Every structure is written in C-alpha cells, then in structure tokens.
Image (cartoon, rainbow, N blue to C red):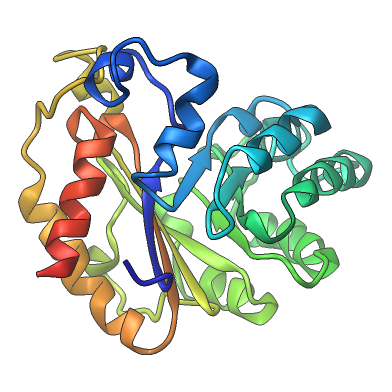
Length: 265
C-alpha cells in the first residue's frame, strides 16, 4: 500500500471486535500492535473526550511500527465547550502531549458540532472566530477542520482553510453533502493532504445493530464512488487519509479492507 494513501478505522476497539477482528483470547493490551499489522493508520476518537496522559501516548508510540500514523481529534473542551475562545493553554497542552508521537503524529482534527443561531448567527460570525485561531496554528503539523453546518460549506469557508493550509474534512454522513453532491462546484482540497471520514447514519444503523462484528449495510457502490473521486487527487501528489466508522456499514475493519481492495483494482 502506498504511503500516499492511508486507510484505517475510527478507534481500534469496539464491541464485537474482540472476536470478529482480533484473535480469540488476545489481551486488550496487544490490540493496537495487532491492528498495526492490518492498517497503517488509526483515528483516535478518545482524544475528543480528553487529552490523554503523556504515558498513554508514549505507549501508543511503543506499540506501533515506524511507518504508522495516528490521527487525533482535538478535545471537545476546545471545539464544543469553549468553541475556540480562551483555550490557548488547553490547546497547547494537547499539542505538547500529541507531539510525543513524533514522526507518527498524523492529522489533528477539529471536529465541530452543528451550530444553531444561538451560538453563531451566521457563517460570517463563525469565520470571524475561526480565522484568527487558524492564523495562530503552529507550522509543522497537519490540521483538518470538520463542520456540520452544510450551508456553510462554500467558497468562503474553503478559501479560509486554503489560506492557512488546513484540510477541509470530507464526510460521508447521512445529512451532509459528499464532495460530488455540492450544489456549487468547489475545489475542496485545500492543502497537501485530504482527510476523509466515512461516518454513515448512526441512528439508522443502531436500529439494526450495536454490535460491530459484521457488515449490515452494503456500501460497495459508495466506496467505489469515493475511490473514483479520490484517485485523481492522489495523482496530483496529495496524501489521502481515509477513516471508517462502524456506523458506516456495521464493521469498520471489513469496510476499510474493502476500500483498499477497490483502490487496488
């Protein structure tokens, strides 16, 4: 697999994986090392809830090979609670801790929730807060931004990210337009890497299952469309990161493997 295309899952553990993905009887402490024999990257959802202990991060580093990359979500304290206000020390602490991954630190993702008018009256108001924050981001890291207000995903937003070399997170979720579904034709690749999250329909799939050990929704056609969309981007020399959530089709490792199969065809 080319290191210009990296595919993994959102987290490396889930209910059902202890038998469906990991060898039966394997200790949980060995999961990450085993995971790294199957995929060369992982997106950690756990960092969204809190900055991990430095010893934990060093443990991640020690359990993975030299070419492995970690994508980390910025803690919700910064993106959801403080919404980029008075959070410089919080972010500095997170970044210092994440930097213990050294060469294994991949993209750092700011995942924002949906903002109603009580938080931001308009996209312009959001950008007025976002742009000064982006201007302060240190060089030498890969940053990505995810928003859930689909009407804000326009040229103004894309240009703000491109100006600072920050990636626009490309999402496959039930109520967010995918790149080829935008009404306005936009160049959505805003830096030297693309960040893709295959999230799916959480509510819909949890009506089918909450044990993530098998595919319950056929997403082959969608995966093929993503492959077709991303191929020309890769040819331009852009590094592509793709992360699959269990809610996309029911069993993220198998979906990620299927993506890799389609990519290789």
